[in-house]
Length: 299
Ligand SMILES: Nc1ncnc2c1ncn2[C@@H]1O[C@H](COP(=O)(O)OP(=O)(O)OP(=O)(O)O)[C@@H](O)[C@H]1O
Image (cartoon, rainbow, N blue to C red; front, side, top):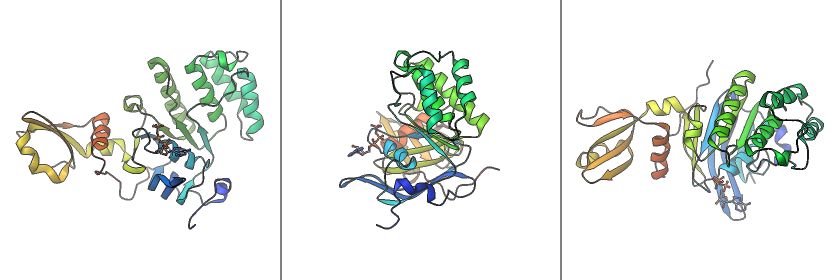
């Protein structure tokens, strides 16, 4: 099949273009006869922390597995720059191993392993090296899984729902750790989650998958600059139909998410959309899309 790239030889495939950590072109993944991902074209500039969001079954895990080289695309290509570390949704750790044994395994399996970094990180987090992984809290296990990935010194860190099952404090701690590492070590991060509020303070790039297709992609600030939330009488909504992503009608009032910043009747109440409103607006309107033109790489 044209463009089919087996995962095991992905290392030989051409790297992503300069300035980009990741590029997919026309990527398609099929399980038996059903397409889980269709015509997925993305470019993620290096150094970004990207949020991958979408409803259940949208194809997020499938996309992350394709990027990590864990499955063969049926169409299109994935190109990455440098080493990719992937932390799977179920954080596969051996519960009977101690933390020290877990780090030792990481060292044996990874030629670029940074042992002193891994041990220092465990010490800084107060995670005892002699404790069995199965006796750690969910948040500590998430930190061990993150440390295993970071100590490999990846260029691209891919995390599939790293916050699932964590309490709010642990979610905050894990996201803060990801942000600090990304800033200090110049790692590009791609992180999937269902909870937009967990991501909005940390991520600067958004990828919204819906029904196996990319519906929105781009710099979060640019996307928010390009959208407005308008509130006003429902009968005015038709005037903005060509710019409207979604409309929420409540009696005689309507709230619209509109793309572009149109010169609107001053009687509308207009404000900038939040990230949550942007994501929810597009999820409610699966046919709408906000996809970038050529993506500029920051100097
Ligand atoms: N191993 C598999 N065999 C068959 N179909 C699969 C397999 N894995 C995923 N699918 C299907 O592919 C589609 C995308 O699934 P995927 O797990 O990638 O979505 P997701 O966005 O990660 O979902 P969730 O948010 O629920 O984790 C779904 O329709 C799912 O049922």
